[in-house]
Length: 142
Image: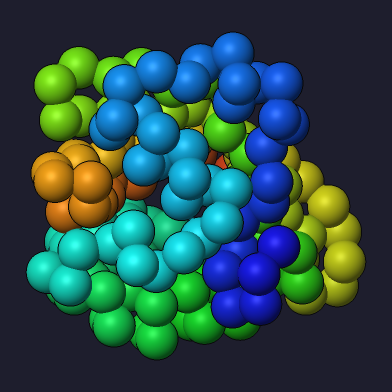
C-alpha cells in the first residue's frame, strides 16, 4: 500500500480474471497502484455524507491532499478490496469490501460499491456506495 493512499492490493488472480476493456484496466490500475496520475485533474469524487470525511471533492489535488488524509485519520487501518468489476461504456462498477480498524485497532469489514467514470484513460468521476451504518457503529459514531 502506498503511503497516503488507503487502498489494499486485490489478489492478482481476481484482477487477471477480469482484465478486459481499457476503462476496466484504468480502474484496476487505480486499485493496484493508487497512482494519482490516473485521476483527471478535474475529477469529481463523491463520498456519502454519512461516511467519515464524506462529501464532494473536486479536482485531483482535493482528492489526494484532502480526502485521503482526512478519511485515513479516522482509522488505524483502511483498505479497499475490490472483488467484482463490471464495465459498460465509460462506466465501471466495482463491488468489494473495506477492511478497517478503529483507532483502537478493532478490525471490521464493510461492503461497498464504487461507480467510476473513465474518459480518455483518465478517471473523471467516482461515486461511493457503502454500508456507512456499520462503519459508523464500528467507530462509535451515531
